[in-house]
Length: 468
Ligand code: FAD
Image (cartoon, rainbow, N blue to C red; front, side):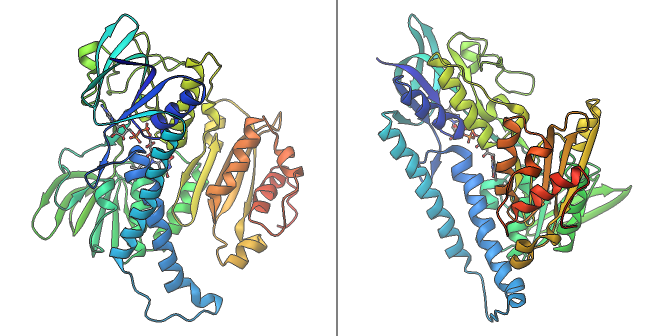
């Protein structure tokens, strides 16, 4: 039986990054991953195959179409006859995914990570480590990292199948649905709803919660809802779904909203109500690996499970279900296994929603800071007062800075507007270094750039914005 210092189960952002880092640190490493796309092994997990990457590829393609059909004219560009070749758009998306998933296979080779394709299962503990069934081959692992990720949560009334789809189905419709229903107004529902609306679908979003984007700063949620409604997305909040029936032509959904019963029919229905930890096939029960009541693998602050030598990271341990959080945990656990001090700062994890306008934040919301008993000051600056945003023809949204009124330390920064997915990078770097809003306000930002809005919002926190 071959033996390894580390065997990683799962080759998504958590697992493949942990494997590369462990190998970089001189540990003999293997990774076993079961993801299959088009009948072939495909590393990268949910994120690269059916999540972050293909959704952004489709968001970018559909945004270009919207730009050409709705915004080009404003720039003096006359375009007639623009149309969508969905087959080509989907093929382009698949090409991007192929490139990146193939890239991980290359990185594994380069870093001498042994790759197994198929299920990884915990078998038993033996002297020297754990026996893992790696796609039918038993190997001995001194340490095992469980990184088996998550799967879409199904709505019991509307099991996936036919016209009812989760993320992978929603990224591969073979025709633009005329009427598209989306259950769940979270990140995934908003991104996928946006793609199909831009391509011509009439999109209705049904959300059980009474409000919109309740995890975001209230000012951002309010502005985002306004913008999305303006684009034609229809929202219903506080809905209670009582029946979902599916026929050949589509799906009908019956729900109550403000005590009124409504039945809506859709050609396709995306269910995006969150994700659940994936541990099926792992052998958790057989070896006594503890799961919490919601099915997440329980870990301590060092990603140690209840079993010695078995660690867990990424979506399967819960917390923010984000690829970059999963990756950082992969680095941290590998470094800990190599005797280093791995660490993830969960206080400064950026959140991004890749809609148009984009939404991004890091740190505490204004209300969240107040709930912690902090005295806060805030500064807000709109993109409509920024030369670059006006030049782009996209002056929607603003940046809001939340700082501690006593110490001036940046507590959180919230953005809605063009390219804010990139602008948030500056903020997380500053917050990692414990910067104040004054630090941000006094940092020279290139002119004319969108980043000047960030600086001006920091100036506004001290009531000294220059261009408003
Ligand atoms: P996963 O990526 O789920 O990988 C787990 C891997 O383990 C899979 O390949 C799975 O097949 C494999 N596996 C499971 N069990 C076994 C087993 N027993 N043996 C072998 N292999 C096994 N996050 C962002 O940060 N930014 C985004 O823009 C973003 N967009 C998203 C869009 C969509 C539509 C979706 C669905 C998700 C998105 N996410 C995004 C979330 C992101 O995809 C996840 O947080 C991330 O993939 C988690 O990484 P992971 O490695 O923990 O799990």
